[in-house]
Length: 71
Image (tube, rainbow, N blue to C red; front, side, top):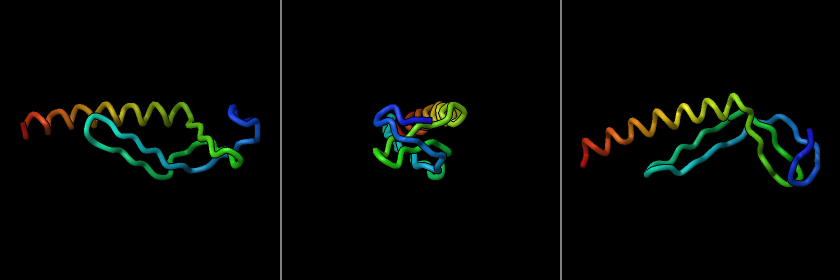
C-alpha cells in the first residue's frame, strides 16, 4: 500500500491516537495503524476508527453526566 501524501510504501505499526474533545483529552497508545516512514502519515484501520468512535460516544455521555453533577 502507498502513502497518499508522498507515495512511499506504508507498513503496519502501532501508533498513538490523541484527541481533545469537549473539555477532556483522550490518548491511546498502541493503536494498530499503517504508517509512512517517509512523511510520518498515519492511517487507521476501519475497525480501529469504529472502536475509537464508540469509545468517544461513551466518554461524551459520561463526561456530560459528570458536568451535570458538578454544575
